[in-house]
Amino acid sequence: MSKIQSINPYTLELNAIFDTLSREELDTKIQTAYSAYLDWKKLPTSQKKALFLRLADVIESQKEKLAN
Image (cartoon, rainbow, N blue to C red):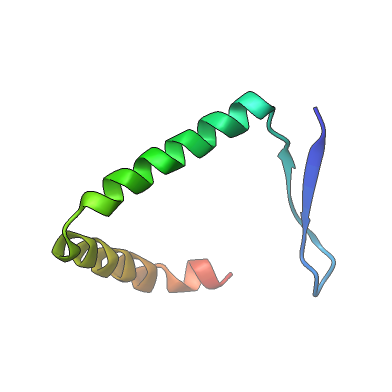
């Protein structure tokens, strides 16, 4: 199986190495994402808003860790 490297373009440091996916694995991931999209699409705007506000709180509480 081949690998994909993620390199920081500014520092040229290696961020991570990822395995590539087979066609079947990729198809499964795409189908899962599409199914999640269809579920998300049905959520009322008020629920989406609440989820995004909760996400913002989590990001705010972890901002130092995320910045690193």
